[in-house]
Image (cartoon, rainbow, N blue to C red; front, side):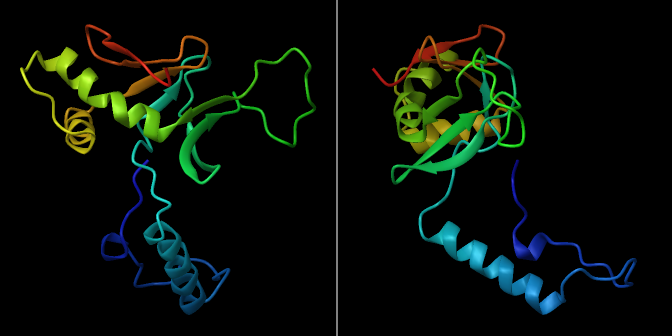
Length: 153
């Protein structure tokens, strides 16, 4: 998922239903959210990383002062705790980003790897998704060859 920037918002000229909050309150709330993002809470892999157990898109979270991703496999605090359910999956963003240049080399067979930001930009530009396998501690590209990298080791 990619959030629209304020200049990309579409604002209706005609009110369709009663407003839940005033436009001024809405814009103020959005500004607070933007400040948090500017303060370092950006998630570079948002919308790219899926859970290898259930195939759901992993959600961004802030964990121990770092960007991370988790999957609760469709469970929430509103559902009763099943003692046999699969534990939540977690992945640290920095561990995945560090290995994206290797994934890039595997995909492209180029001689030199870009930096992690460049490798991430190519993944996004090429429309490649990533599958995180908690048990195997790997990330696999959803390409024809299914290139796989080990993370967190």
